[in-house]
Image 1 (spheres, helix red, strand yellow):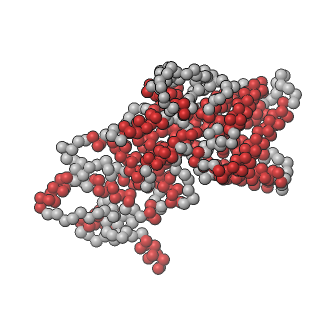
Image 2: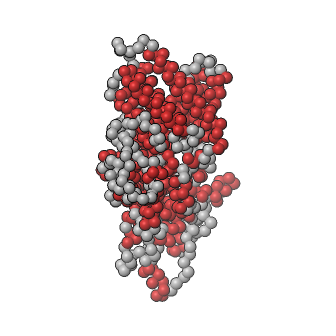
Length: 537
């Protein structure tokens, strides 16, 4: 009985609610709503500041100036709820409360006064205010978030021109727009780390739901824009990197439709004077399209996406390579555009990390096309395999211990090689197939597995010197590829095999500090190995 009383007291507010106070009725202070408010079907709110008593004309003026008390009520909605209670609310309710609270600065105190300008009710101002409030609730400063983004995520996802972003952000301070607001919120979302603290994880989940909700909302009110497409690419990467593969598939599809509607899929490299605003706008659009295409292919690497269509068109051999971020933002004097190469020029030396990832995605696309169209992969094995291996060798040479910036290209190439060889291994040979092709393919798969394991050894040796913020989430895919072949080992108690397995686990554990998908892959790997070892007992 004492336990029941303590539990009931823990669910009571420290003071009476504003509704009971206004009607001068006794309040039992129950949470989340008191009995009086439930009985009268009123909105129950705790923690609102009590206004001083007024009389006569002063009270009348006050009611006229703020007839609904909108801003005061909304402002207190989120902050007045104890954190212990928030943690017990379902995500949808927490999201509703957060969005309601985020409107607190939208409405001035004299909302219904016809003499007040209605500019505050535009979609742009409402969305900007909501995003600002959501970020402020977390105790974060926007400038700190943006600096973090450009020093981490931007290194492997360079779809935003820093120069144009800085100019736009400066203009945003006086003339906010809804699409740029959503881009800022998406940048905040992807810079947030997972946490072992359940309450912080709940906050991260609500931030994601708020971003997803406002992203969908804005599309209904404002024209498609490059900022919205960029926000969609960032949001898709976040969903994929945190194991929400179905959500990522839907988001990237929606984002691709916006890009098609804007004509980004046919955007060439710029013919404008290099360094001009028009040139920078064209090049940012091209980089954004490539970021969208690469994200689409990364999502397709997940086994659950087998048989599903891509969101973007096939990569053409005469598609232009994107500029590297330092090339786009180096500024300087105006000049004629530099000569640009096609993505199919995979033997070209000196290509940067973003260009290499585009080339790797192009070759991955060729592998995927050959498999989906039913072409004889065996006939194309040597040519495609040679191209993939050649580019992988070039990337590994450029990598030179700089983990992070070339991970995307490495992931795509290893995944493409695995897909190619596994598909060829399962096909029936024809009259032109060499007699030992099965053995050749198995040797190639073993070599790829050894490469992934060697990468894990090298990574783990240097992991303490890495900045976890700059690491992209692609490692989960190459480990998934390797596990298919490593589990064919004959002796699961061999010391070398056990050490290899432990190195893969350590690498995934490290990446799990930043991206949840690595932890999910680690769990899957442990389960698979346990089941396989049990079958061999």
